[in-house]
Length: 147
Image 1 (cartoon, rainbow, N blue to C red):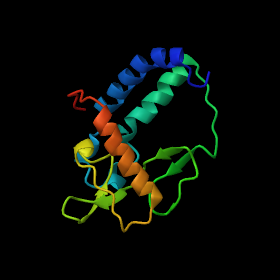
Image 2 (cartoon, rainbow, N blue to C red):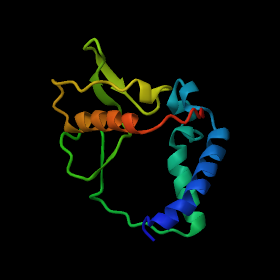
Image 3 (cartoon, rainbow, N blue to C red):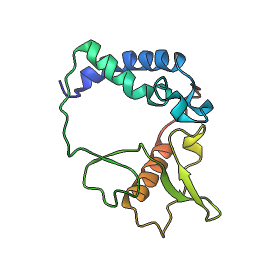
């Protein structure tokens, strides 16, 4: 199976439970001052990714891995040639005062501090990422859950 709706419906509660287990068993990412010191033990910031993999494996779900499916963010890659973004890097924009602001999913209040697109930044991925984040924030209802 490669992501059928019924599989995802069965997977979702397992995924959430695994994510909670992983986050309880690691140092909270927002408290880590030097990620290198915790690198071998630190899973909380990637908990949802590991949780998905573990839950899917328990269900016996199989996935096709393709080289042309995702692009990492950051201005090292100037154009988007793939249909999906993986935002593992800092996304650069500007704050309301026009100052450079680097956004990361690891920020404690990341959905509330999304920068604006910097018109002087030639990086298509940064622009696309900022617009996608703002669009997601406008459509996602807050859960009130704190990890």
